[in-house]
Length: 397
Image (cartoon, rainbow, N blue to C red; front, side, top):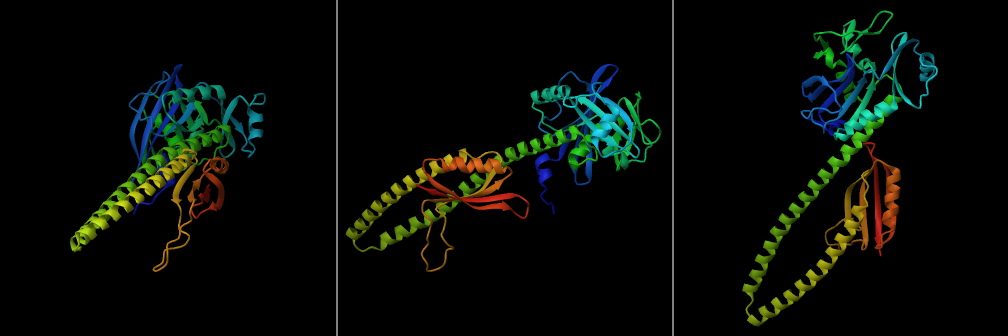
Protein backbone atom coordinates (compact mmCIF):
# COMPACT_ATOMS: atom_id res chain seq x y z
CA UNK A 1 0.00 0.00 0.00
CA UNK A 2 1.42 3.37 -1.04
CA UNK A 3 2.14 5.82 1.78
CA UNK A 4 1.94 9.58 1.56
CA UNK A 5 5.30 11.36 1.36
CA UNK A 6 5.39 15.15 1.66
CA UNK A 7 8.75 15.53 -0.22
CA UNK A 8 7.37 13.40 -3.09
CA UNK A 9 4.12 15.37 -3.01
CA UNK A 10 6.02 18.67 -3.31
CA UNK A 11 8.87 17.67 -5.66
CA UNK A 12 6.89 15.16 -7.72
CA UNK A 13 8.40 12.07 -9.31
CA UNK A 14 10.33 13.67 -12.18
CA UNK A 15 13.49 15.74 -11.84
CA UNK A 16 15.83 17.52 -14.28
CA UNK A 17 19.55 17.95 -13.74
CA UNK A 18 21.55 20.46 -15.80
CA UNK A 19 25.33 20.82 -15.93
CA UNK A 20 26.66 24.10 -17.35
CA UNK A 21 30.19 23.55 -18.68
CA UNK A 22 32.64 25.10 -21.11
CA UNK A 23 34.17 23.01 -23.90
CA UNK A 24 36.50 24.52 -26.53
CA UNK A 25 35.55 28.03 -25.33
CA UNK A 26 31.85 27.29 -25.94
CA UNK A 27 29.18 27.19 -23.25
CA UNK A 28 27.24 23.93 -23.25
CA UNK A 29 24.67 22.16 -21.12
CA UNK A 30 24.20 18.48 -20.35
CA UNK A 31 20.61 17.69 -19.35
CA UNK A 32 19.12 14.64 -17.71
CA UNK A 33 15.52 13.75 -16.85
CA UNK A 34 15.13 11.14 -14.10
CA UNK A 35 11.83 9.62 -13.02
CA UNK A 36 11.11 7.86 -9.74
CA UNK A 37 9.18 4.61 -10.27
CA UNK A 38 8.39 1.54 -8.18
CA UNK A 39 11.53 -0.22 -9.37
CA UNK A 40 13.71 2.81 -8.57
CA UNK A 41 15.16 5.74 -10.53
CA UNK A 42 14.81 5.55 -14.32
CA UNK A 43 16.48 7.80 -16.91
CA UNK A 44 13.74 9.08 -19.22
CA UNK A 45 15.63 11.62 -21.36
CA UNK A 46 19.14 13.03 -21.82
CA UNK A 47 20.88 15.53 -24.09
CA UNK A 48 24.03 17.64 -24.50
CA UNK A 49 23.74 20.86 -26.51
CA UNK A 50 25.20 24.35 -26.84
CA UNK A 51 23.78 26.91 -24.45
CA UNK A 52 22.62 30.29 -25.74
CA UNK A 53 20.71 31.43 -22.69
CA UNK A 54 17.67 29.22 -23.23
CA UNK A 55 16.69 25.63 -22.47
CA UNK A 56 15.02 23.74 -25.33
CA UNK A 57 11.22 23.62 -25.25
CA UNK A 58 11.16 19.82 -25.13
CA UNK A 59 12.07 19.97 -21.43
CA UNK A 60 9.16 20.43 -19.02
CA UNK A 61 9.76 23.76 -17.25
CA UNK A 62 7.27 22.88 -14.50
CA UNK A 63 9.60 20.21 -13.07
CA UNK A 64 12.22 20.96 -10.38
CA UNK A 65 15.66 21.77 -11.87
CA UNK A 66 19.03 21.20 -10.18
CA UNK A 67 21.93 23.20 -11.65
CA UNK A 68 25.57 22.14 -11.59
CA UNK A 69 27.68 25.13 -12.64
CA UNK A 70 30.98 23.75 -13.98
CA UNK A 71 31.90 26.35 -16.60
CA UNK A 72 35.05 28.44 -17.01
CA UNK A 73 33.47 30.95 -14.61
CA UNK A 74 34.07 28.48 -11.78
CA UNK A 75 37.53 28.21 -10.21
CA UNK A 76 38.45 24.94 -8.50
CA UNK A 77 41.45 24.30 -6.27
CA UNK A 78 42.73 21.36 -4.28
CA UNK A 79 44.20 22.03 -0.86
CA UNK A 80 45.83 19.75 1.70
CA UNK A 81 43.69 19.42 4.80
CA UNK A 82 40.11 18.62 5.76
CA UNK A 83 39.60 21.03 8.63
CA UNK A 84 35.95 21.33 9.66
CA UNK A 85 36.31 25.12 9.53
CA UNK A 86 35.46 26.47 6.09
CA UNK A 87 37.26 29.72 6.86
CA UNK A 88 40.62 28.00 7.38
CA UNK A 89 40.40 26.09 4.10
CA UNK A 90 39.30 29.19 2.20
CA UNK A 91 42.13 31.28 3.63
CA UNK A 92 44.60 28.55 2.73
CA UNK A 93 43.46 28.35 -0.91
CA UNK A 94 42.18 31.89 -1.66
CA UNK A 95 43.72 34.21 0.96
CA UNK A 96 42.85 37.58 -0.62
CA UNK A 97 39.28 37.14 -1.92
CA UNK A 98 36.29 39.20 -0.81
CA UNK A 99 33.80 36.43 0.06
CA UNK A 100 30.87 38.84 -0.06
CA UNK A 101 31.21 38.64 -3.86
CA UNK A 102 31.65 34.86 -4.21
CA UNK A 103 29.81 31.62 -3.57
CA UNK A 104 31.91 28.61 -2.58
CA UNK A 105 31.50 24.85 -2.06
CA UNK A 106 33.92 22.51 -0.27
CA UNK A 107 34.20 18.77 -0.93
CA UNK A 108 36.33 17.05 1.73
CA UNK A 109 38.11 13.78 0.93
CA UNK A 110 40.43 11.71 3.12
CA UNK A 111 43.37 14.13 3.25
CA UNK A 112 42.49 16.84 0.73
CA UNK A 113 39.67 19.24 0.03
CA UNK A 114 38.33 20.49 -3.29
CA UNK A 115 37.12 24.07 -3.23
CA UNK A 116 35.02 25.55 -6.05
CA UNK A 117 34.13 29.25 -6.20
CA UNK A 118 32.07 31.46 -8.54
CA UNK A 119 31.00 35.08 -8.52
CA UNK A 120 27.57 35.74 -7.06
CA UNK A 121 26.80 38.07 -9.97
CA UNK A 122 27.41 35.24 -12.46
CA UNK A 123 25.17 32.82 -10.53
CA UNK A 124 22.46 35.50 -10.20
CA UNK A 125 22.53 36.18 -13.95
CA UNK A 126 22.28 32.45 -14.72
CA UNK A 127 19.32 32.00 -12.38
CA UNK A 128 17.64 35.05 -13.89
CA UNK A 129 17.86 33.42 -17.34
CA UNK A 130 16.05 30.39 -15.93
CA UNK A 131 13.47 32.52 -14.16
CA UNK A 132 12.71 34.34 -17.44
CA UNK A 133 11.90 30.92 -18.94
CA UNK A 134 9.53 30.21 -16.00
CA UNK A 135 11.91 27.51 -14.74
CA UNK A 136 12.14 27.08 -10.97
CA UNK A 137 15.59 26.06 -9.75
CA UNK A 138 15.35 23.88 -6.64
CA UNK A 139 19.08 23.37 -6.04
CA UNK A 140 22.57 24.35 -7.19
CA UNK A 141 26.17 23.13 -6.90
CA UNK A 142 29.59 24.35 -8.08
CA UNK A 143 32.25 22.54 -10.11
CA UNK A 144 32.60 18.80 -9.60
CA UNK A 145 31.69 18.98 -5.91
CA UNK A 146 28.29 17.38 -6.43
CA UNK A 147 30.02 14.12 -7.41
CA UNK A 148 30.77 13.64 -3.71
CA UNK A 149 27.17 12.41 -3.34
CA UNK A 150 27.63 9.45 -5.74
CA UNK A 151 31.34 8.59 -5.71
CA UNK A 152 30.88 5.95 -3.01
CA UNK A 153 28.29 4.12 -5.13
CA UNK A 154 30.82 3.04 -7.77
CA UNK A 155 33.99 0.94 -7.78
CA UNK A 156 35.60 3.01 -10.56
CA UNK A 157 39.00 4.49 -9.65
CA UNK A 158 38.62 7.33 -12.14
CA UNK A 159 35.47 9.12 -13.28
CA UNK A 160 35.13 11.37 -16.32
CA UNK A 161 32.81 14.35 -16.74
CA UNK A 162 32.33 16.37 -19.92
CA UNK A 163 35.79 17.92 -19.74
CA UNK A 164 37.45 16.61 -16.59
CA UNK A 165 38.68 13.44 -14.96
CA UNK A 166 38.25 12.81 -11.24
CA UNK A 167 40.58 10.39 -9.54
CA UNK A 168 39.89 8.64 -6.25
CA UNK A 169 43.60 8.09 -5.79
CA UNK A 170 46.75 10.04 -6.61
CA UNK A 171 48.22 13.43 -5.91
CA UNK A 172 45.84 15.27 -8.23
CA UNK A 173 42.10 14.71 -7.94
CA UNK A 174 40.79 16.87 -10.81
CA UNK A 175 42.44 17.29 -14.22
CA UNK A 176 41.31 18.51 -17.63
CA UNK A 177 40.45 15.59 -19.85
CA UNK A 178 37.98 15.48 -22.74
CA UNK A 179 36.77 12.22 -24.24
CA UNK A 180 35.51 11.89 -27.81
CA UNK A 181 33.20 9.00 -27.01
CA UNK A 182 30.88 8.49 -24.04
CA UNK A 183 31.66 6.16 -21.13
CA UNK A 184 28.89 4.40 -19.23
CA UNK A 185 29.17 3.90 -15.48
CA UNK A 186 27.06 1.74 -13.20
CA UNK A 187 25.87 3.78 -10.23
CA UNK A 188 23.84 1.65 -7.83
CA UNK A 189 22.61 -0.58 -10.73
CA UNK A 190 21.74 2.48 -12.88
CA UNK A 191 23.58 3.05 -16.18
CA UNK A 192 24.88 6.66 -16.35
CA UNK A 193 26.99 8.20 -19.12
CA UNK A 194 29.90 10.39 -18.09
CA UNK A 195 28.28 13.29 -19.99
CA UNK A 196 25.38 13.33 -17.53
CA UNK A 197 27.32 12.23 -14.45
CA UNK A 198 27.27 15.60 -12.68
CA UNK A 199 23.64 16.20 -13.69
CA UNK A 200 22.69 12.91 -12.05
CA UNK A 201 24.70 13.81 -8.95
CA UNK A 202 22.67 16.99 -8.62
CA UNK A 203 19.38 15.11 -9.01
CA UNK A 204 20.38 12.63 -6.32
CA UNK A 205 21.21 15.48 -3.96
CA UNK A 206 17.82 17.04 -4.75
CA UNK A 207 15.93 13.81 -4.01
CA UNK A 208 17.82 13.02 -0.79
CA UNK A 209 17.98 16.69 0.26
CA UNK A 210 21.33 16.12 1.93
CA UNK A 211 25.06 16.43 1.23
CA UNK A 212 28.32 16.17 3.15
CA UNK A 213 29.68 19.24 1.33
CA UNK A 214 29.67 22.65 2.97
CA UNK A 215 29.74 26.22 1.73
CA UNK A 216 27.67 29.30 1.01
CA UNK A 217 26.32 27.75 -2.21
CA UNK A 218 24.99 24.81 -0.14
CA UNK A 219 23.12 27.24 2.11
CA UNK A 220 21.81 29.07 -0.94
CA UNK A 221 20.77 25.75 -2.46
CA UNK A 222 18.79 24.95 0.70
CA UNK A 223 17.04 28.30 0.33
CA UNK A 224 16.13 27.52 -3.30
CA UNK A 225 14.83 24.09 -2.21
CA UNK A 226 12.60 25.59 0.49
CA UNK A 227 11.30 28.30 -1.84
CA UNK A 228 10.38 25.68 -4.43
CA UNK A 229 8.53 23.59 -1.85
CA UNK A 230 6.61 26.58 -0.52
CA UNK A 231 5.57 27.62 -4.02
CA UNK A 232 4.48 24.07 -4.89
CA UNK A 233 2.63 23.67 -1.57
CA UNK A 234 0.66 26.85 -2.21
CA UNK A 235 -0.24 25.95 -5.82
CA UNK A 236 -1.24 22.37 -5.03
CA UNK A 237 -2.99 23.42 -1.82
CA UNK A 238 -5.22 25.85 -3.71
CA UNK A 239 -6.24 23.12 -6.18
CA UNK A 240 -6.99 20.67 -3.37
CA UNK A 241 -9.08 23.23 -1.47
CA UNK A 242 -11.10 24.05 -4.59
CA UNK A 243 -11.72 20.34 -5.13
CA UNK A 244 -12.86 19.91 -1.51
CA UNK A 245 -15.21 22.90 -1.70
CA UNK A 246 -16.75 21.65 -4.95
CA UNK A 247 -17.16 18.19 -3.40
CA UNK A 248 -18.90 19.64 -0.35
CA UNK A 249 -21.20 21.71 -2.54
CA UNK A 250 -22.12 18.66 -4.63
CA UNK A 251 -22.81 16.57 -1.51
CA UNK A 252 -24.97 19.33 -0.02
CA UNK A 253 -26.92 19.65 -3.24
CA UNK A 254 -27.64 15.90 -3.38
CA UNK A 255 -28.53 15.84 0.34
CA UNK A 256 -30.87 18.82 -0.01
CA UNK A 257 -32.54 17.41 -3.14
CA UNK A 258 -33.22 14.06 -1.45
CA UNK A 259 -34.84 15.55 1.65
CA UNK A 260 -36.63 18.23 -0.30
CA UNK A 261 -38.42 15.51 -2.30
CA UNK A 262 -39.31 13.71 0.92
CA UNK A 263 -40.70 16.93 2.36
CA UNK A 264 -42.79 17.50 -0.76
CA UNK A 265 -44.25 13.97 -0.62
CA UNK A 266 -45.12 14.39 3.05
CA UNK A 267 -46.84 17.72 2.42
CA UNK A 268 -48.89 16.26 -0.40
CA UNK A 269 -50.00 13.34 1.79
CA UNK A 270 -51.10 15.69 4.55
CA UNK A 271 -53.06 17.84 2.16
CA UNK A 272 -54.92 14.83 0.67
CA UNK A 273 -55.90 13.58 4.12
CA UNK A 274 -57.53 16.85 5.13
CA UNK A 275 -61.29 16.59 5.10
CA UNK A 276 -61.98 20.25 4.95
CA UNK A 277 -61.01 22.41 1.97
CA UNK A 278 -61.06 25.43 4.25
CA UNK A 279 -58.59 23.82 6.69
CA UNK A 280 -56.38 22.88 3.77
CA UNK A 281 -56.43 26.46 2.52
CA UNK A 282 -55.53 27.81 5.97
CA UNK A 283 -52.71 25.31 6.37
CA UNK A 284 -51.32 26.19 2.95
CA UNK A 285 -51.49 29.89 3.81
CA UNK A 286 -49.62 29.33 7.05
CA UNK A 287 -46.99 27.28 5.21
CA UNK A 288 -46.57 30.04 2.63
CA UNK A 289 -46.11 32.66 5.33
CA UNK A 290 -43.58 30.51 7.23
CA UNK A 291 -41.65 29.70 4.06
CA UNK A 292 -41.46 33.38 3.23
CA UNK A 293 -40.10 34.15 6.69
CA UNK A 294 -37.61 31.28 6.55
CA UNK A 295 -36.40 32.33 3.10
CA UNK A 296 -36.09 35.92 4.27
CA UNK A 297 -34.06 34.93 7.34
CA UNK A 298 -32.02 32.38 5.39
CA UNK A 299 -31.30 34.90 2.65
CA UNK A 300 -30.10 37.49 5.12
CA UNK A 301 -28.00 34.98 7.09
CA UNK A 302 -26.49 33.45 3.95
CA UNK A 303 -25.63 36.86 2.53
CA UNK A 304 -24.08 37.99 5.81
CA UNK A 305 -22.14 34.76 6.40
CA UNK A 306 -20.88 34.69 2.79
CA UNK A 307 -19.65 38.27 3.11
CA UNK A 308 -17.89 37.51 6.40
CA UNK A 309 -16.28 34.31 5.11
CA UNK A 310 -15.09 36.06 1.92
CA UNK A 311 -13.52 38.86 3.98
CA UNK A 312 -11.67 36.33 6.14
CA UNK A 313 -10.57 34.14 3.20
CA UNK A 314 -9.17 37.13 1.27
CA UNK A 315 -6.75 37.85 4.10
CA UNK A 316 -5.39 34.30 4.43
CA UNK A 317 -1.64 34.37 3.49
CA UNK A 318 0.03 31.60 1.47
CA UNK A 319 1.78 30.23 4.56
CA UNK A 320 -1.54 29.36 6.25
CA UNK A 321 -3.78 26.46 5.27
CA UNK A 322 -7.31 26.48 6.70
CA UNK A 323 -8.72 23.05 7.56
CA UNK A 324 -12.03 24.01 9.21
CA UNK A 325 -14.33 27.04 9.42
CA UNK A 326 -17.55 26.73 11.47
CA UNK A 327 -20.21 29.45 11.64
CA UNK A 328 -22.06 29.41 15.00
CA UNK A 329 -20.45 26.18 16.30
CA UNK A 330 -22.19 23.82 18.74
CA UNK A 331 -21.79 24.53 22.44
CA UNK A 332 -21.71 20.78 23.14
CA UNK A 333 -22.25 17.48 21.38
CA UNK A 334 -25.75 16.72 20.16
CA UNK A 335 -27.61 14.29 22.45
CA UNK A 336 -31.02 12.68 22.15
CA UNK A 337 -33.89 14.58 23.84
CA UNK A 338 -31.67 17.57 24.52
CA UNK A 339 -31.94 20.93 22.76
CA UNK A 340 -29.27 21.80 20.21
CA UNK A 341 -27.34 24.83 21.47
CA UNK A 342 -25.04 26.92 19.27
CA UNK A 343 -22.62 29.72 20.02
CA UNK A 344 -24.22 32.69 18.32
CA UNK A 345 -22.04 35.30 16.65
CA UNK A 346 -19.01 32.98 16.85
CA UNK A 347 -16.84 31.70 13.99
CA UNK A 348 -14.42 28.85 14.81
CA UNK A 349 -11.41 28.55 12.48
CA UNK A 350 -8.73 25.84 12.49
CA UNK A 351 -5.71 25.22 10.25
CA UNK A 352 -1.96 24.91 9.95
CA UNK A 353 0.81 27.46 9.42
CA UNK A 354 4.46 27.34 8.36
CA UNK A 355 5.25 30.92 9.41
CA UNK A 356 4.42 32.10 12.93
CA UNK A 357 4.94 35.75 12.03
CA UNK A 358 2.50 35.54 9.14
CA UNK A 359 -0.05 33.90 11.47
CA UNK A 360 0.27 36.71 14.02
CA UNK A 361 -0.15 39.37 11.30
CA UNK A 362 -3.17 37.52 9.92
CA UNK A 363 -4.87 37.42 13.34
CA UNK A 364 -4.24 41.17 13.77
CA UNK A 365 -5.71 41.88 10.32
CA UNK A 366 -8.86 39.85 11.11
CA UNK A 367 -9.30 41.66 14.43
CA UNK A 368 -9.41 44.97 12.52
CA UNK A 369 -12.44 43.89 10.42
CA UNK A 370 -15.58 45.96 11.04
CA UNK A 371 -17.77 42.98 11.88
CA UNK A 372 -15.28 41.41 14.32
CA UNK A 373 -15.51 42.29 18.01
CA UNK A 374 -12.53 40.24 19.20
CA UNK A 375 -10.30 37.28 18.25
CA UNK A 376 -9.38 34.56 20.77
CA UNK A 377 -6.57 32.06 20.04
CA UNK A 378 -7.80 28.80 21.60
CA UNK A 379 -4.95 26.56 20.41
CA UNK A 380 -1.46 26.97 18.92
CA UNK A 381 1.18 24.23 18.82
CA UNK A 382 2.70 21.21 17.10
CA UNK A 383 0.69 18.09 16.20
CA UNK A 384 1.93 14.49 15.82
CA UNK A 385 3.14 15.24 12.25
CA UNK A 386 5.24 18.16 13.59
CA UNK A 387 2.95 20.66 11.86
CA UNK A 388 2.08 23.93 13.57
CA UNK A 389 -1.69 23.87 14.09
CA UNK A 390 -3.98 26.56 15.46
CA UNK A 391 -7.58 27.24 16.41
CA UNK A 392 -9.16 30.67 16.86
CA UNK A 393 -12.63 31.95 17.74
CA UNK A 394 -13.98 35.15 16.18
CA UNK A 395 -16.67 37.01 18.12
CA UNK A 396 -18.89 39.04 15.80
CA UNK A 397 -20.36 42.40 16.71
